[in-house]
Length: 154
Image (tube, rainbow, N blue to C red; front, side):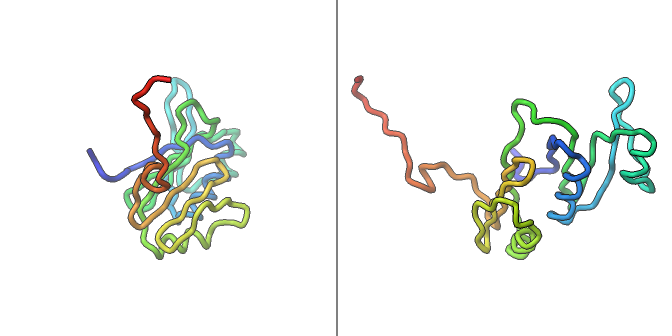
């Protein structure tokens, strides 16, 4: 089993806004914008063309890809299908966590912020859990909430 994530793909209702949000928040670079054409094939917008160029040409872009280091985030225009991701955990340094926290707008719901951990709900209903030492913990582990199973039948 691998211990790192190379890419994620998310559905967002407004592709241009989501691209700007994630690009700015996580300081990512644009690596491509695409449109799906005949036969289900995807075509990339040339890098010297932007959103306004595509709109002027009557193109409705359907995907935007962003990268930071080796990590890629692909954003697809659309609604959340069944099974959609609702939480993403990432590793980061304390400096990165602080910088991301500072870039969050006041309307973003922050669930937790500590020097080594940040959890927030973004405008696309994705919960981001960013920590220096990311772990997935059960309710029994972090809150001592354990199911009680009785051997006796009621």
